[in-house]
Amino acid sequence: MSAEQNATVVRAIEEAWDSNDLDSLDEHFAEEFDNSLSAMPGVPAGLEGAKMVHRGAMKSFPDRKVEILDLVASDDQVAIRGRITGSNQGGFELLGAPANGNPIDFQYASIYTLRDGKVVSHWGLNDAQTLWQQLNAGGGSAEGSEASDGAEGSEG
Image 1 (cartoon, helix red, strand yellow):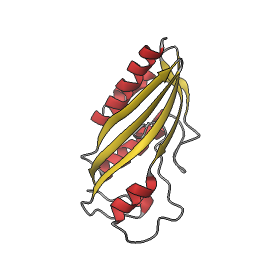
Image 2 (cartoon, one colour):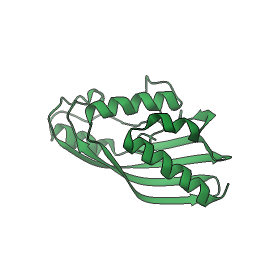
Image 3 (cartoon, one colour):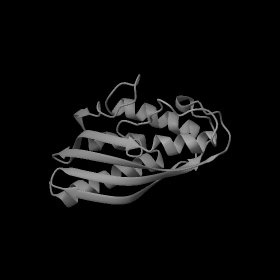
Image 4 (cartoon, rainbow, N blue to C red):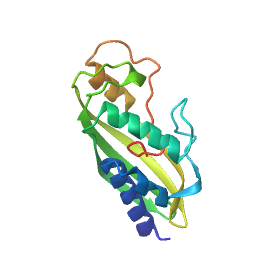
């Protein structure tokens, strides 16, 4: 597939994460999908693990929105820089934050590798430091805190 076609697939994936349409993701990921380089500790790698993380994020941030800021496609890879906004309505245990209504607004980067129109691997990185500061409004310590979502650009 062309870089443009792969970019269309990745946009559909990001839109599915944003709209919480997890069932539609299955058609975009290869059976051998690997996100082990960015999967969260304690969560199985793969699409099902990424969906688990997403469901948890939706409990923490039910008003969560994903925005693609930049998308660059080249052959079989598509890179995204995105933004996640919302508010801490359910608490975020991973970073030790109780529900407090604090707004969140942080960026993430994702690199998707596709083969035959399906994602075969994903690497992602969230700005966990900014998220931690927003969740805790300056209390506690962020030492050792990292947040990643596996496949979700936003999570994937």
